[in-house]
Length: 276
Image (tube, rainbow, N blue to C red):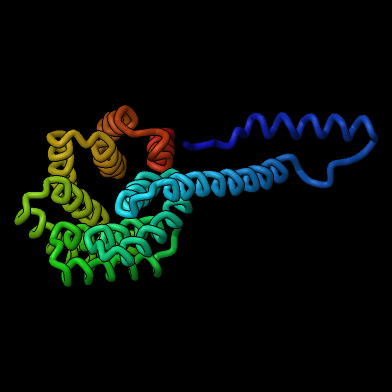
């Protein structure tokens, strides 16, 4: 369930208010764009609360606590991009429930997914705290898959704050774990983030090679949304090289594979790049 803000409808409502005010010889003490923006935020907050209540109610209706936990973990991940505030609330609930059930696998996953929600909301302190806690838990309880993803999450956050050396230091163990346990999806994430670091360090050809390896794995595994991310970053590299033909080609491929509703920020970013 996802409700979107209808900005044309908001504008129409404001127009009606203006007409009514004019008829009564009154003035509107606010600029149209400001009024629309404030109402937009108010409606967005209300919709966010409604969506959050919906998922929490759905969880409460699941009597089996293990199944409820798995629902919370799944929805934390699925809503991370489109509804990060909702994802955060669900993730914190998942951490609490996983801890009470002694389900260490889902406890570590909940730490990772909730940390991602914090990162998307710009709360890097809480994000890195959860990522490191997840890493410690995965080591303590011998959960190598989640240990590898914890390293990737830590590296990804370091990329955001431009600590590229630290990012590479965490991608190394992730790459090793992915190869050891044969986790192709983890391997694709590692190649992608390695490519992002190399891109920022201006090692363009190595970056292209690394992201292309990630793309090839995701094509083999059928990870379509992951392919969109790869195409987007390849487009960025070519764009920065002023190779606008290859940049446009990759942005087109990204648009053809991105999930518009679930990955709204990625979709908007691609459209923005195409317009430049």
